[in-house]
Length: 317
Length: 259
Ligand SMILES: Cc1cc2nc3c(=O)[nH]c(=O)nc-3n(C[C@H](O)[C@H](O)[C@H](O)COP(=O)(O)OP(=O)(O)OC[C@H]3O[C@@H](n4cnc5c(N)ncnc54)[C@H](O)[C@@H]3O)c2cc1C
Ligand SMILES: Nc1ncnc2c1ncn2[C@@H]1O[C@H](COP(=O)(O)O)[C@@H](O)[C@H]1O
Picture 1 (tube, protein in one colour):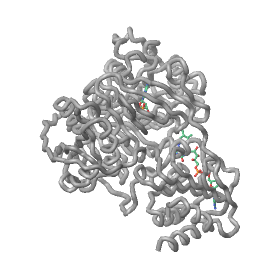
Picture 2: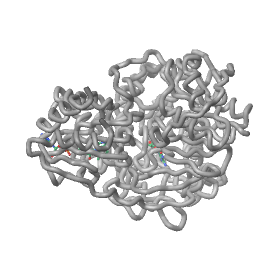
Picture 3: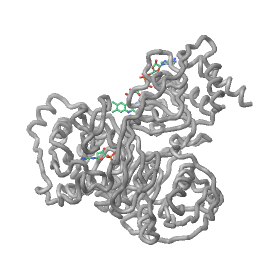
Picture 4: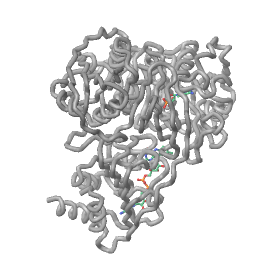
């Protein structure tokens, strides 16, 4: 059976959920072979085995961390040549797509991004224009390179050997031209990552100030959720830009999206309207966001949200 | 310093966007066309760098004749000149074809710095900057929220989920920008008048000796098999807060097993 290369996203210790989703998906088409760059493969091995990974190619070099994107694409290109996989799967995150794009150029292969499902012959389902249209598409040149949106596939356990196979590709000097001097962590904490989270709680202009975003964080923490924001909030400097949801921010598709004090402009909807369940708190019954709501509360968020947090805490303790 | 800013004309998000039934490509006539918003930030950054480092800004766009409007807007913001690659054979190009054609033309124009938006609002692939860096064999400095140039050294803040990375490279390089980088200027009346006289070169594939077998719908790396409009979401329950809105919301979340 041919291999399917799955490029792993991880934080140096734990493998990200999206990679387990990709391994689950890969099993339908062949032998999932995970590609791991940097350290942490030993620690992640058992988890990858639980989801059916057959192998893990481990490229444990510092260059993958020290330089932007290009070394990872070089590694994948070399593995593609050696292993002739029938497809390469990556997460449709900013970096996953960039790696895929470079790999597509190197191998003259077609690339599909923002994929939410994959059928026979790698026919992919994509949602475009903010989820308004479903497209099915397929790669017709080279080896399919497919970037799959986090949260689109549910990870299902299956047993795999997850054998560790060290690989040591020679990375060219050209791939080492954009050097990482420093990684600046601005927001640490226990919260899940925005695009990976099963629940996202977002605040909009209605929240009123940077200090009041604490209310959104409290609600998020009571649900184990990630925090998001509308552009009105990031523009005002109330919350960092990397948390912006929408057309010029992140696209999220969680199980539950809670929009608080957000009107639902089309550019915001473009980033969240494929969420499975949507809850809204807004004082204006005419706000367009209610068109998307599975459950909406018309009311003042400063009354509704604290009560909601209290009630959740009561129920979960 | 020779700065090239790549701009794309896209359908306005506010108008209904759709695909053509005939060949499943973007129906550009159905929607109003505007410059891709992030590209205005790219133009602004190019102009600021040019002002600080005695440079010139060339706008490059690949797209149908109508993209000339977008090019004029970029010139009215203050760019010096433009190159417009127009050819029917380019229609329906995917990212492989687009990046190959762009890289080829950029090679003809010549550059010290290439600036793009980090993502377009229609395709939303966000892969063109990385693919250009790959084609041209120069550093990829994408998702920049800050750019500093000192001689031939360029340093950026690359936006990340956890904050940002500080990245260093040597020019020439490809930079793509995020919204937080600057506040794009509005074209002044003087700028709009001046733009009418600025040189725009319109090139076809033959003009740049680009092989048509690399581009266009027929040579794309991917094909659309089918498409359909998604049904609108089913209407949900909306309640008014009569002092128990939070409690009711919690009950709903419990009924759906979220808590
Ligand atoms: C090219 C382009 C790209 C864009 N990209 C994005 C993007 O990526 N993401 C994005 O979000 N936006 C984006 N926008 C902006 C978008 O058009 C809207 O301006 C923005 O989403 C509005 O944010 P908001 O809903 O928080 O604010 P508003 O539209 O001002 O809505 C605030 C809402 O809060 C409610 N409210 C106020 N006070 C309370 C209270 N006490 N209790 C309850 N409710 C209250 C109000 O009723 C109102 O509905 C983009 C715009 C353009 C032109
Ligand atoms: N046809 C084009 N002509 C000029 N620039 C383009 C074109 N397509 C994409 N770009 C640039 O590439 C960026 C990213 O686009 P994309 O990868 O398509 O999301 C855009 O913001 C533009 O700066």
